[in-house]
Length: 258
Image 1 (tube, rainbow, N blue to C red):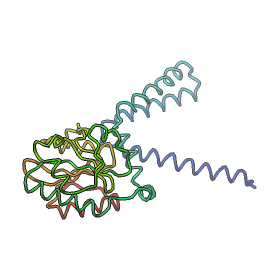
Image 2: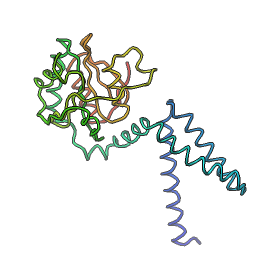
Image 3: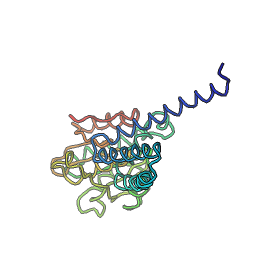
Image 4: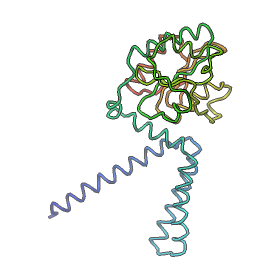
């Protein structure tokens, strides 16, 4: 008859097995369809060969592949930082973590929408980053700190041509416009960027690496777009923009490409 100790061990074993396979499943979802997938497959092969060499006590082979495991893992982390950052950001978007971080106040969204409406009508290009759970310190430090209350007038003024800060992005956290003139990372994924301009590429790049939401106003057409989790979608007007921002902030929903 199994003792309580054996039963306890089996329960922990099941928990351990479940957690490991869940993490592997999440990792596979992250690398699926990206440039990291082939390298991940190579890393898995190295681990399997190393395990076989260890099981059959093939000393020379085991030493070689044990060394390769460390090198390959370090190279994987260095080369695929964007994918790993996006994965960690997505992990923070589950409901229990989102509960710990306040969402953007409704009045901030309304002020952003009013600014976007004016900018769209006057063909003033702009990039507005809405900060969520992930820290954006490196982005904020690339611009000029403002720490001002969010207002439509201030946003429009910043992005008006000939303004010293109009070329960068503004970062909004809660009801505060934290910084302006910020530099965002550009997406390098040719399958998505196509003929997109710099602002739209920056919006995709930012949402690839963080959980932030980015609003884009095209200077050429006045079109309004919203980027979330590496997906860019056009909004018909500022009302639709508010609806999409509210939905994403409340539920973490991923926008779908039309």
